[in-house]
Length: 83
Image (tube, rainbow, N blue to C red):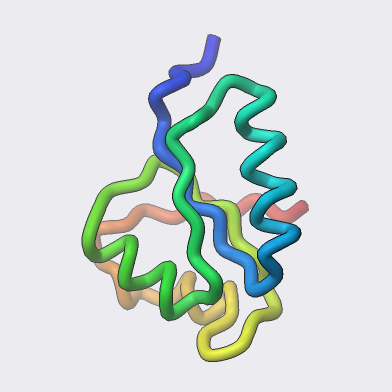
């Protein structure tokens, strides 16, 4: 059984996709979800708080998902899962 208190960060430049992922997580019982509109926004949120999972788009303006994976946040341990 998954811990329903896990904190998610959903990163996508399309608000519709963020809403879809948020709703899917909610259906699975995960309500602790924050959103970021690109990698730069996500990086700021990662530096300001802690998250258990990041669900990110690859292709976004300003900073894409691959750039977000760079070691710019040394306290974050990444486990890459391609979907």
